[in-house]
Length: 350
Image (cartoon, rainbow, N blue to C red; front, top):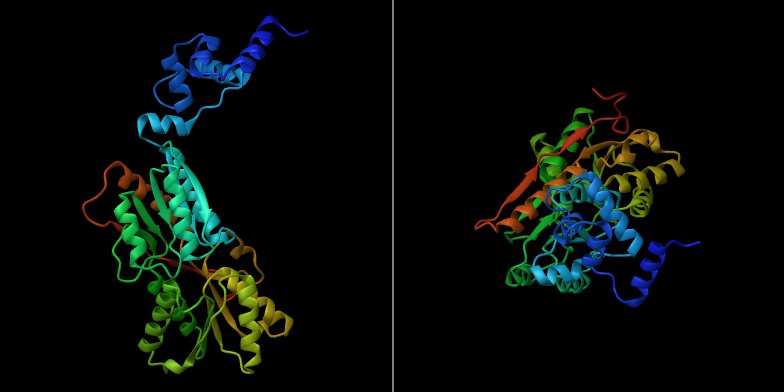
């Protein structure tokens, strides 16, 4: 049999929308205290917080953040635009970004552009309709200067993450990809490699261009003929790596070393080489050092960009821009590291 209290709760939900005032009365606290609990502000004892949460559950109360942001003209939601949400790199990056936002009392609304600049513009317009406090954007490859001009005109705080726009100055967080390419090439040169392939990505990808420039600079320092490096374009995932690996096999003679645009590409390349029974003929280095790289067989040597750390740094920079927009342009570029395992020919990490 239901109690009078249960009955009153039922009637309250049926008669009209439950308000914060109802929750406060039900929990036996002031409306201000109830507000502090639902917004996560102020000092409230754990006992009182539990009582308010219980009242919210019993009454079916849901905090309307949208209405609250309209009243206060403030929001604690940040829009995040990634190019490929299925990419493990972006998954790890979002872990760091979400953690840093949560520590500051913010939440994210994540959308994926599929590396399409038109879709990207549509998504950003929709995010602005949600009154997001700021934007963390991994720009689509063909984004132009007008894209940045639109962001600046909107006066919405923003930061570009891992991808930048050529010739454009904007808040940015990402790895030093020229250094990353150089580290991979120098290590392979140390193994005595004399023929190379860079596999994955497309010419429109600035990260690919920067990594190849790093490889070429290392080869030039070693007085190597630039013709000893071939480039194979493909999507930056496992399927793309498989196709690229098949292209290399069709050329006949394999290069001695393969540097990949991502770890996913490296996994696909290895699959193609294994199918042909030639996996042991080539030294392979991936890029980003996602968590599965160490579990591969052989364990994948990779240029570590620390995506979780990049995500955290991006969130911290964006929160700074939200709190106090900077007069200048803050850019945080992090040096990658080569994580040596076995795919490059080393038997164990030093």
